[in-house]
Length: 344
Image 1 (cartoon, helix red, strand yellow):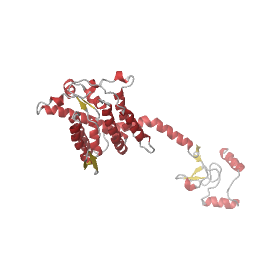
Image 2 (spheres, helix red, strand yellow):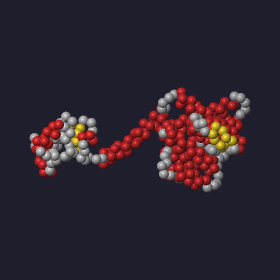
Image 3 (cartoon, rainbow, N blue to C red):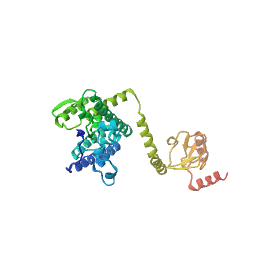
Image 4 (cartoon, rainbow, N blue to C red):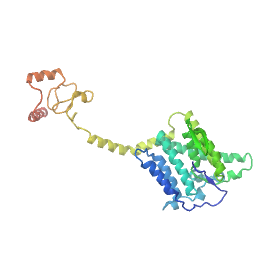
């Protein structure tokens, strides 16, 4: 279960002392990605790495990245002062190891299932869309509540964490599921699990951001509606796919060259010399000489390389009958016929 986005009214943020949960998280990742036959989805791994690195801030990252106080989500600062850095960076910040651990274990499970079924390009597009939708809807909810009264606690709250995106991913993952889940002693349909978790988290962990989680659920519903309304891949997925093809083209081209170099036979002249095979094993429009294994055009009954008659034609049978032999030639005879062929 993803941990909620933590909040606090204009107070300083600080990281708690290490509780040893990061090694446990690393062990879970190793178990998922290191086991035999694992799919190892790359986008999920990149998201995990980004969240952990931003939390740990090793080396130069400590100077480059803004502090958690400068990156936490605050509707008032975003709307009134245009501080959009908070809008995009706050999901990747976490207050504590436990906050990071529960969010990342949830991301690990949901990400592997969704990315494996959707493909990496579409999954990356979905995560970007859910992040923007969940943050945007949370912003609108905080602003809209002011119209119904003095709800400055929501409008002026600070929040960080990936939970909003995780709630949206849970909605997408369970949208068409007919399964039931066991949640804190209750058995409920999987497609309603996000709503039940929203309430239970507020009951047991009252310091979490209710609007952040609610915005994530609504973002998942909006995403599903958009997918049903507009069939086919979205432009962002097409962009990611195109970039991936361009980046991986040199590798695929090199692999193709290596396969061609190691494949049977070699290209020479207008045909191919390979292992001994019958005409049925060659490509359409070609027949393979049984003597020198040269692939000839089906329009001729005489091998262009060694002048041996085609075995499966009537012409070949007549030639063999006149020669009184089986048609097999010695090495010296093949060499002599090749020289005659190229001296014409």
